[in-house]
Amino acid sequence: MDLAYNQEYTEFRDELRAFLKSHGDESPPAHERGKPSPRAVAWQQKLIEHGYAARTIPKEYGGYGAEPDILEAHIIAEEFARVGARMGHNGDNRLVPTVLELGTEEQKQWLIPPSIRGEMNWCQGYSEPGSGSDLASLTTKAELDGGEWVINGQKIWTSGAQHADMMFCLVRTEPDAPKHNGISYLIFTMDTPGIDVRPLVTMTGEAIFNEVFFTDVRVPKDQIIGRRGEGWFVANNTLKHERGGLGDPNQAESRFHDIVEIMKRETIDGQRLLDNPIYRDRLLKLQGQMLAMKFNGMRVLSHFAKDEEPGLPRWIVKLNGCELNHQMANMAIDSLGELGVLYDDSDHLRDQGMWQQRYMLDLGLIIGGGTAQIQKNMIGERALGLPKEPKYEQQV
Image (cartoon, rainbow, N blue to C red; front, side, top):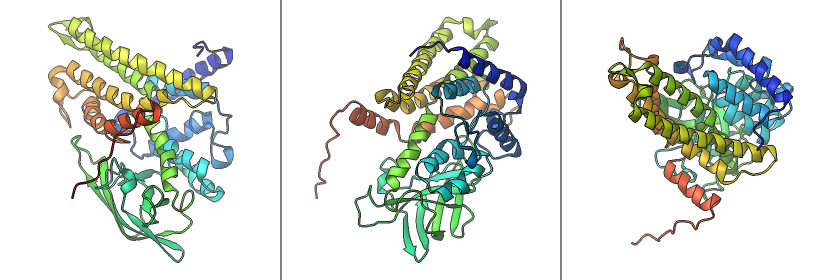
């Protein structure tokens, strides 16, 4: 692709940089990302007003109403990542595109405006104790009783469920159908009677994930996205947006620059880490990986700009991005020396423990959204056309 922007895009970037220079300090700090707060809602609304969030969401659903422009979207993501400012959240980058594509007009009017403003927060009910990598084997069931679905079962690793207002959830509605064909995609409020949320404290020391139990949870019949039994198709639409966000090359570049600043600041025997050949060599290897991800992202962008399916370049984003993020967090912790092992409220904690938290969370994200092993199988089979792994009948 042509990496040079014309005058229109150059002016757009300048306008965006001026906005971030004037208002960037209003963005929630890194350690508050993902947590509902008045500050986050105010920031989101300001972004929508200026067209930097919900940019292409139609005005009738509370968005800015601009025409889709791949290069403008890329410039916005790149500039926000450059300064470390927050953009988007679950309701914005996963649920909203799904509702726009597959929801009814009534659902769009109900769900999209408060979701893009950050006033309606979502969680995702996909994984179960026995259905993680093989998600289609899920057993949480929903049976139709008059005008309501009655849900019974359990979900696990449900991010943000303790703070969420709403859940989009996969349930089995056709028990006799093949496993991929018997699933439906329901939406409901988290204060519905019969829902029990139990936080799971991870090695980060926080309860980021939860297990959620459903006991005779009654949901109106029309709170379904898509048709009954077609939830697998709807869910893959949502996962498409989630996986792209997990491997964002702009975020990787922003983290890399943060590590460079740490290495300029930290010293060994009076020498900057940036001048130490061993540390500098590790940094250059990470830079090479980061730039490869960046240019792969541009390749994906080129395909989208020409209305083409990116194929393999898109498939590798989540796999490479999550592994690179974990390696960079590791580099940051090593660069902090003995301070890198601190956490919680130590007097000598740097960056409010952001890197320690990222190191442990990013390890989990290599599993989240589809494990690295599953991702490699999908890349091999669907992108490279390799034969599927043979399945052997169980010997009795």
